[in-house]
Every structure is written in C-alpha cells, then in structure tokens.
Image (cartoon, rainbow, N blue to C red; front, side, top):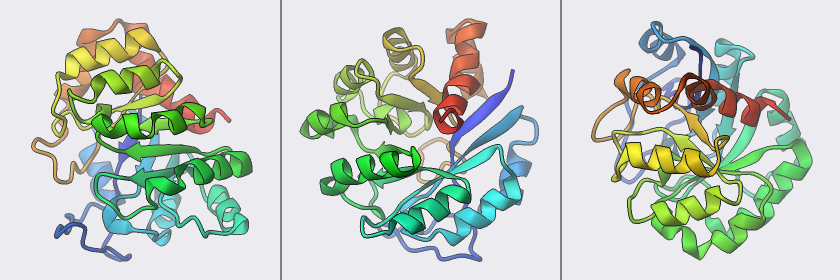
Length: 248
C-alpha cells in the first residue's frame, strides 16, 4: 500500500495566520505533519490552504521546499493576480486553486467560471471547492462546463449527495477526506461515488482536522480497504490523486 495524501493543512505561525469566523487554528508545521504520519506509507500529497491563511503564499512555498517534490500546493488567490505570479507559483510546486465557500478566505463563487478557466489554460491547474453539496445546484451549470474541478470532504452533507453524484457523473472529482466532519453515511457515499466514476475519489488525511468533530484516524484508511478490493483501494489511496495533481 502507498498513500498520496490529497488533502492536509500546514499551519506555521512563522507565517501570516488570520482569524477565520472567530477561529484560530492550532500550530501544525511540517515537522508535526511528518511526526503524525511517520507510520503511514505516504509517498506525496497536497498541502491545502485554509481560510485562516487567506492569500498568503509564503507558508506554502516554504512547506513545499521542506516536504519535497512529491508534494504540491493548493492555494487561494485573488482574481486580480497576474499571469506572471501564477506561473511563478506553478514553478514553486502549486497545482490547484481553492475556493473556500464554507469558511471564506478565498475568492467568491462569482469568480469561479473566469478564474478556474484562466488557471487551467495558463498552467493546467484544477480548482477545488470547499462547499456543502446542497448548495451545488446553484452553480452546477457552471461547474459542468469547467475543465477540472474537485470537491472537498465528500460534499459534507447527506442532503447534498444526490447533487454531488450528478457532478461526479460529469467528471468532477471528490476528496475522500474529513470523515469525522461530514454529516452523511461515509460508506454509502464512497461506494456510490466509486460506482459512478472509479477515478473520482482521492483520499486525504485532512490533518490536523481543524474544527472537525472527530480528527483523522488510521481507521479511516482501513475503512477504504474494507469497502474496496485492492485495485480500487490503490486508486483511491494513491493513483487517482497522484495522476490528478501530477499527471498533466
């Protein structure tokens, strides 16, 4: 078994951290991440910018240098960013743009169509949405036409799952992350998403599990291995995400 950790956060107070909805996150630098995951067969991953990091890129570039070339970054940017700045971030290992609809700190959805197309055409990035899937119908028509989109944490809610599944059928990817923060039947959601598109699910630890009711447990990995055969587990735990981030 090998794992590509498709979703985790680095929180380093040597760099700017901003309060988000009255919340300040715990410190969780690259050393803490390496310690927490030392017994897991992690062979790369994606550091995801949180609402509390706003548009700061310095922490992300620093963390990527420390973790190495098998890791990439998912960042938040203002839509006024220049092409030159985007290209420089790409060279530093950043591979995706995040829209944090749930918590803020990013551009809002009115910029999604323009911005997602722009970064994809310029440097091949996809765009990631942290959104409750029950809100997807309002933007589904936009998402369906965009070149590359993923949605965090299984779409968060049971109510939103049918809308999420429709988009999975149109090629949208889904982070199999945050099992302790979602309000849905995780096993059922995983099976349904995989049955529609075996390439869609991408596992991540979601460490350090900020604001989650239950933090990540190794049992979350075991759950995937129990639900799926070895070939499917390999896709969910490593192959799908690795090709999503590094395949283009």
